[in-house]
Length: 328
Image 1 (cartoon, rainbow, N blue to C red):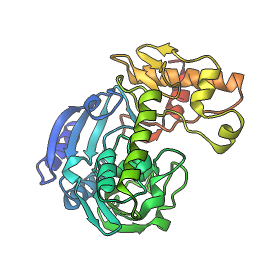
Image 2 (cartoon, rainbow, N blue to C red):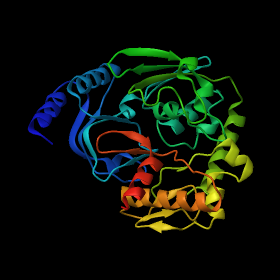
Image 3 (cartoon, one colour):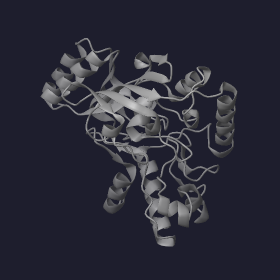
Image 4 (spheres, rainbow, N blue to C red):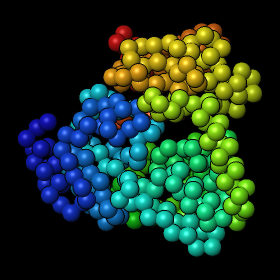
């Protein structure tokens, strides 16, 4: 880090932008418990502070990474040479009026699902077991049971990369399976408006409990992991099944690279056995992809995103392939 870069980061840290820390361990801010240090870590309280950060990093060409709970991210062991902006519990206000829910971008998704259930509103049952924030869920159009949160979205309020506040409609978000137009444009989700039809509280609760029971039985819960590593496609699902089945069918359950292991419980999960590095995980992803390609002929692509030290975010298999080509 150059002296000029340090000066700029200290200048940003001196502004009214929320809670700031230097050299923050990123392993404390993602569900895999992996990653080095962030030069500057910021937790804002409101959209004005977010705008201040975005305008500053744009003007000074400083790398920026925006995260929620980090449940779908693999940080590099080298950390991030720039600013990490966390939208968390400081921005988690939830308001309900009739069938409308407005949730701050940092709202914890399971908590939001429970709030909607208590209000007698349906549509978020499939989200009850998904760790992460609503901002991250909307960005990825996440969900379960082949559903996506985008189905319930009315509009999304963002701060764009220039620090301008905007409101985008559901159509403008262009939701598709595990994707949205919000990805890759450098914006920050401030709040989300959802339309949730009225339902029977007892029935909603039973559906949520059933979902959680299935998750307890199928998915690893005691070891750090990021949830599903690989994406399922309709072609794959209809011919050879979902990624977990494919990986299990080729005999890879329990395969390890360093301290990263394919879960014995569900083969589309990679668990941190303790002290796993980003290189361990990427090496395991590369092995899985190569063996599945050789034996079945399908190209498994990652749902999980890799975060480079330069603040770039992209599907983790791209980095895994790069390391494989370099022989690392």
